[in-house]
Every structure is written in structure tokens, then in C-alpha cells.
Image (cartoon, rainbow, N blue to C red; front, side, top):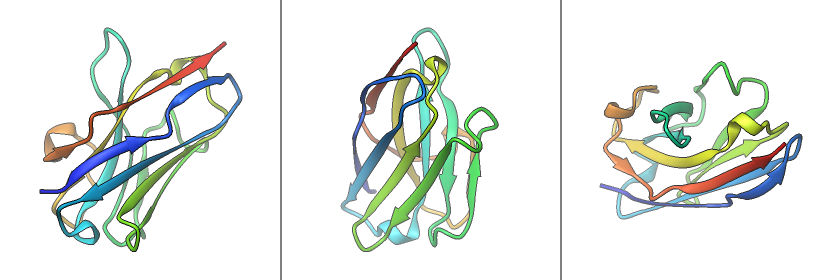
Length: 124
């Protein structure tokens, strides 16, 4: 299984941008579909975005569509989440996840490897 480490979180004003990174090690990164999830205090973990192993297929939650973009660099074993036009309600711990299949998935239980999370705080 791959090991995942997220970075890039922080404090940003509403309307600002952040780019999260997730570095993978210990597995064949290019054969994994990657996803981003988030969890706000008192709420369940929710799907944000996912990208296929080749990067040709992506899927987004409606709440972030048009504002967030997921991408990957298989040569660097890294997946990214570019977050623009951030809103207060985007505040959460963001987790990177991996699943060893070719198809994109949106359910957390379909992912077998998780990072430790990175905090994103958007001030209003």
C-alpha cells in the first residue's frame, strides 16, 4: 500500500487560494486512483475530488465544482488540489486517499490508504 503525506494547508481569507499536495511513497502510484476528502468539526468526512490513474478522468463534489481542480504528476508521485475562491465553509481537515483500481470513486470506504490530513482554515 502507498503511504501518503499531505501538505499545503493553512489560513487564508475568503476569496483566496491554496494548493494542497499529497506525496505518495511505497507503492505504484501510477496504478492508483487518487481522491481528496475533507472533514469539518462535527461533520462526516465528505468527498471533494478524485482523479483516475492516468489523470484523464476527474470528478468533483458539486460544492467545489468550478473552484477546485485536482491534478497529478505521476513522475513525482504527487497529487494536487488547487483551491480557488475559497469560502468559509471550505474550512476543514483535508485528506488525501488512494485506491488500487483504475476507476474514479467518491465513497470514502472505497479508498484503502489515507494521509494524516492537513488543516485548511478560511477566514470570513
